[in-house]
Length: 318
Image (cartoon, rainbow, N blue to C red; front, side, top):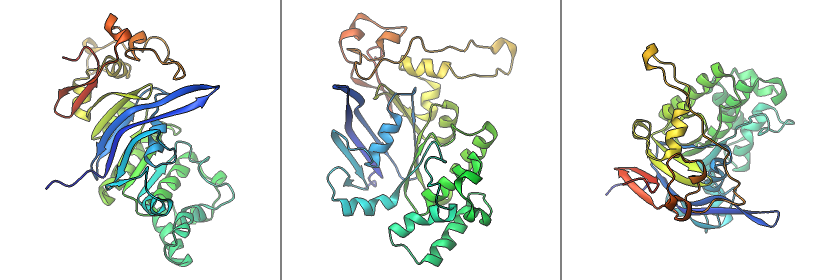
């Protein structure tokens, strides 16, 4: 029998109360993720990517739906069991400096989670911290530094080392390279890929940089106003994008042509993403969609199969 996925997300939703109104952050999102694979989450700012990542870790409680990690329903398990499972689920934040305690040295920050989970002795935890620093490309003397003494790239490597300290199976990478210089981004991306192969890590990689997502991901889910509008294997999505929102996102990538005659105009999405406090009726993308029909304005589209493993939520999909 085939093994069950490491992670199953089933019809989860999340709303917040803002100024007496409901803010629709996540709406009926579902996906599965196999061990050792990477799911890329893409979409504009405000699409719900980071919210969904935090829901997977139960840093935010879902309003409905299920999140199963190794078959355990995270929404119903006791706090003690959740704490045990969290050893296998870690996160790398977008702003590494803000995610580190300024009063802790780097070594103490990496050791902290191990101490909380009562792993090893103080000496063994320090040895583990030094090993991890070396593995992410930092000298062992960095263990004595404070966050303000390091560069952004060094801090993000510390964040990666800290995430690895508990030998996790799943890591949420929440825009881990967006705050870094381009040359440093390349190094960190390659480091994440090498670590995945070495430790059989499973990633949810959140980013608005489609080129990075294409490089790292096995599957990609495209979010718009908290809804998955298209999901497919990475190669398939970039080869045959089906949802108009995905098409416009891919056309907005700056491409350098190999020949002058292959030059293409870089397109941008018209208008601004609507407020999640008052989402449009029907298809939420219809106010910005160049192909919108009258039906799109009043009838919410259902998810439709495009090909094996490829789904899009659009009336235009046949």
